[in-house]
Image 1 (cartoon, rainbow, N blue to C red):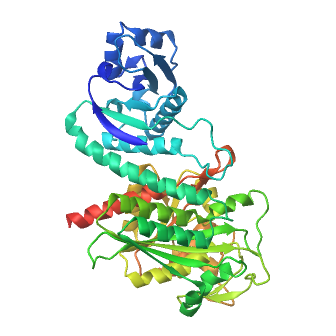
Image 2 (cartoon, helix red, strand yellow; image 1 turned 120 degrees about the vertical axis):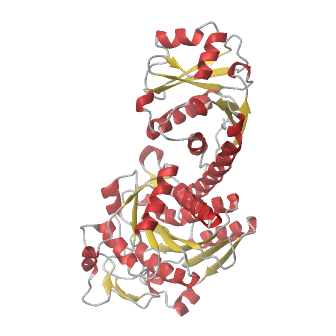
Image 3 (cartoon, rainbow, N blue to C red; image 1 turned 90 degrees about the horizontal axis):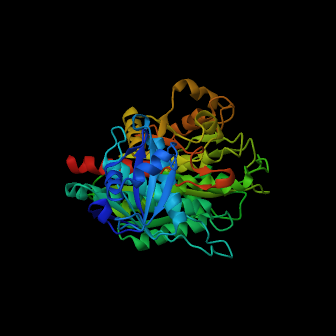
Length: 501
């Protein structure tokens, strides 16, 4: 999709579809008023007659309005402007895109600067509209034998501005949002691929391809032999029952100064999770191909950072493995030694994500990072706690948590700060090892984070549990690409900090 800026009075703009808004009380937006005037009150008559309705997101498509150059005009309702919020803005944009797609036009023009949305500025409205549009246009069809007979025609979105002084900031917002959308799409595609294609080796190949296409990225892959030599017993224990070899993938983006401490992103890359010997129930097990969405978000974020050419150093580490039951598989009660030297009693082989992550987090120490953020579809308990709206955020540094929360609020990819108190640590006690890998039913997402905290004591660290937000289930099943927007915005903010200082 192309996104461009346009100037001009609405009745004189030549476009396939012009989107103008109406709010409660039949109040027309400035551009809608102009169209109404040149068409002798047509819009007012239709709205007062009730053709549009009053619900947010209701649309009415009009063709060939007199004295208007646009082929179509889409009237869209914003509801009560006093009650118009981020969620309703999203519903409004989604409804407009759906109506435009159905119209068959190749292009559309929006007047987003006319929409009043609390303290959100034009840049935010533009960024969100682009990401919502890209989400709406995304299709995962590469594995279908018959492609759609009617591919989407919509290929250009114009953003009409009344003030030319806004063009610079708006163009920057377009560039940023487009890069984030690209990252989200990569994360979605990797997440949507089935486990027989998206294996640890496939992820390693994708990392190498990313380095080939972006000169500031270099990729290295640590194989099982080297993992054994290093002492990554926790990560290797997860892959023990699989024919697919584990991979520790390191992608190094060098956009900052040579001596600048990098931001390190660590992604859980369990490409399929059966639960191992602690086998999961069969129902919905197909969705366990999404257990590598943490890794997918690292890929997507690195792509967005590279597209934006951010002046910052970022390292993406992906701990990739497949968790399968087998004669060689790790058993409940087994004890393994992690890269840190700490021993772990594996009480449940389905709590494998923390095992691949703990060795990757220890490995990340060698880069002397400014901060480490791990991203994982880690616990069902987080879904119970927060549902499917917010990422669970844990951190050993409140300042880092605040930075991530701010980035999430800015991109509407929100997180919620969860406790990481020492009170919960005792649940991980083991009679036979330094710790168990589970802490019982209560506070499951917190004890999982407590487990990871034992491998990051010397680092500025945060953990994002994305089990509730990484994919949609049911009719709209598929990966969401979250939290690529949050992570990218966090890195944009850090890059700006570095430039300022």
